[in-house]
Image 1: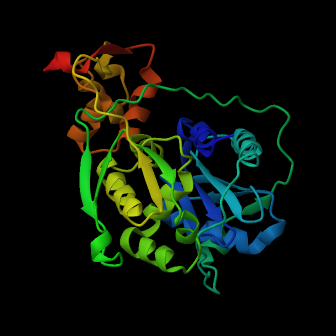
Image 2 (image 1 turned 180 degrees about the horizontal axis):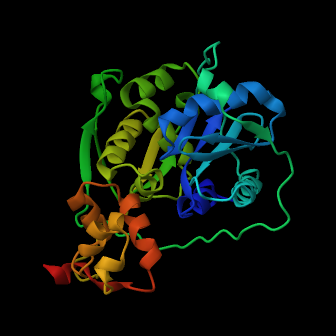
Length: 331
């Protein structure tokens, strides 16, 4: 079972506002749209229940957070929309945890000590332990997949290895969005807490670098990594290039596509009544005219690809259809 496939169940669930894999002391990794303001309450809950916690819910100003232990090192935190029923939230979180236990998760790359004082906000919020008390009637998880639009132009970045590498060993590293990312000989060292590479990686890129290393499964391309983590492709290319230059990762890049080969892309087309769409979706739907990819629409509006995707999912197969065409035919 792959970590990416498991987390997709949350990524495309409209009832989920955000989620994260967090350490037992409350440090978030692989975080997706989880607001910073709910972290103190999550940490307070973890301190109260400790390692005995299995399945807990806590109410926050952003909605209901379900905490579920995956193993002694990792806890899954899922934030649901305020109006979503608790029973369904528990059932959906438990279903994902049952899949996560089949994934070979790496050890947490770092731990951060929590403050001795738990904020009054945490103390005031109702926290209830609901171990194994999931209602018999659970709601089905609806996972709707849609094709990911590739960037209009191959992205590439050349980066020189840093001063920590001997000058005579420096070489150019070229990373493209279609390169498959593999773990290198220094991968384990970079994931070891307080090692030289681990400290340097976090100093250069904070937790984004660690997040990328956590999801590298030696199958995903650079573009898929960026899409999975909802990060700009250019940023992921830069970090992967840095890691390649330090032998943390290595890449396998396909040969340049021959001009005679066709690159098929999908262009979203909205054919419904814009006034009947939700207000927050209209800006995206208005640009779905069958002439732009979803990635191009997201870039034009200055939003993340995933945010644009979430806006069209409710209309897919109804008033939004995808036109498949040859990439070169547009120019």
